[in-house]
Image (cartoon, rainbow, N blue to C red; front, side, top):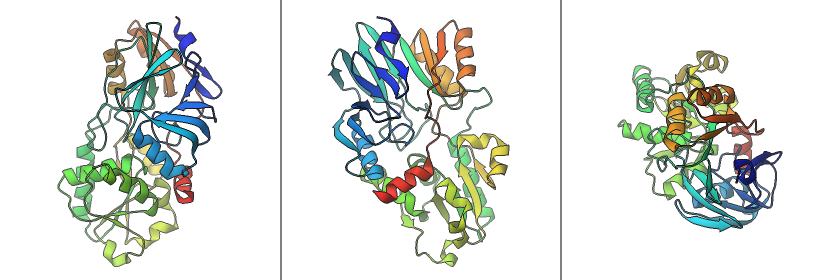
Length: 344
């Protein structure tokens, strides 16, 4: 069997014809396998959704009980037979419940990584290398310039700023699923045990993380908190909220943003970010190239990101490689997700 006979790109996303399903489709389909709950990968309206329990739960939080006609949970390492294809899910290390999807048919195995990272994260199961013939990798940070620093060091920068400016509030922009909870966990690991405040859009997912046994300490809603009480505190909010009228409730706020894109200082300046924190939930260049090697795959398909650079690197390593040029994937649409959570 050729790889293209097992899986291939379509207008709706990656389709597995022998198994009659799609992986992270961008349009409603009858059967969808979802790698994780970020809005660019997990969309409502499918007939049946197969995903980890955490992903299903967070899709329900974001889109409401009727986000799909039917749902089925799958555990890491569990194998299901979908028509002619054996399917298993494996940890991706991206966010809580995130998974790589392994598809095997007639001795050929393709692994679709979804989004992933190989860095330590106390809020989700670590990334697991899955041997395969074809590996489909993201390339969000697929340029050699992207080499992420230690996330603990970035959090130390935030705490040092709090110490230097005790009269100011610190307002940290972070995506509400995964990044916010990781930043909180890193703050706790660094010894910060003071209350951390949350924008309303952060609360449902963060409380869900806690319900899954992830300890995040004393968390409080910022709503109805008096301005003076926010002096010297840290608040997490969606990135868009840090620059709108909502931010005026904070005393002389230091605006921070936790993102791998903060490696590019021009982006920080464009967003008016005073304290850029280079904390990413995606693999950097070294993580991408090391993972490609570790899978042992002889063929690499590259999607959503700097596809051409990673394809070129793969070819220099003697690997067959091609860009998939899929449309509809990238950074989490935080505004859409916040609206969906509010509606739900």
